[in-house]
Image (cartoon, rainbow, N blue to C red; front, side, top):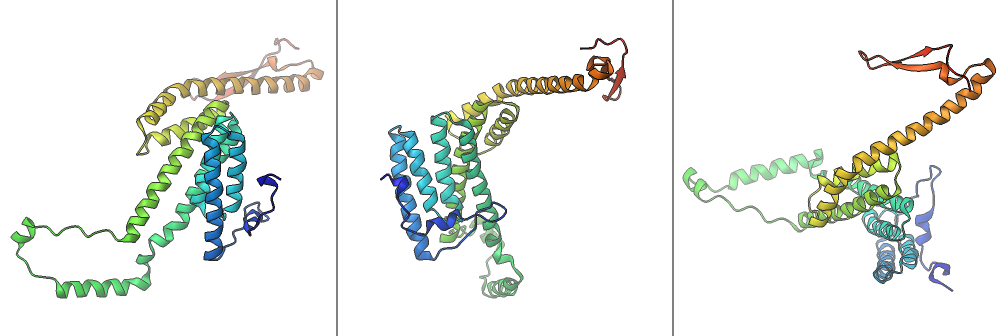
Length: 290
């Protein structure tokens, strides 16, 4: 029996429940259960990483899926790491659509993590804390050492050491930026490879976002610059091809409707007003019918 066929030994199936609006139901685990699930997910992810390194991409995908199933669905960062790796696997086997979805899931998860974290970061500014902050300020003013203005200018006070919480917050921000960068690079490439007007326009948008992000390696910077030069003409050509195809289908449909009246779409011409940029439709009786 394969690992995929084994019945889960934990309560990880809870994370797969769906709400009526198709969003996963968020069920919080106890700290002990969460730690156990996360440990299990990390072990499976390590196994998947080894399979990826050995170029066994299909089995790596299967194990990454297992790792996602073991990870509580409210742990957005941990899931985004796995989803970004899933996108990398799909790129290797040229499954562009699946790579786009996995990378997008990772990016959306990180955005959700940041939106859920922001209220906690501003908690110190709530009204309940204002009196305490004022009292602390008054105490500081009473106990402040009196120094001359010259001494203050010549020996500025050293900056306070960051607290462990501040260090942890900065580290998490750096981790989020790193995973978002990887996911964006993978989605941009998948969109570029998939082709089509929508995908190519999306790839341009991703590469423009990446061009503004810090920490890109020199190789990634070259990729971004190259793609921002190569993509616009491809996007324009794809747009024109799709528009031409759409108008061809509309013309065929219109000819079918007009034929019983002895007319065709050739009897109608769109004329552009150079002054306003708008269009008007002119009827020509001499147009050939089809």
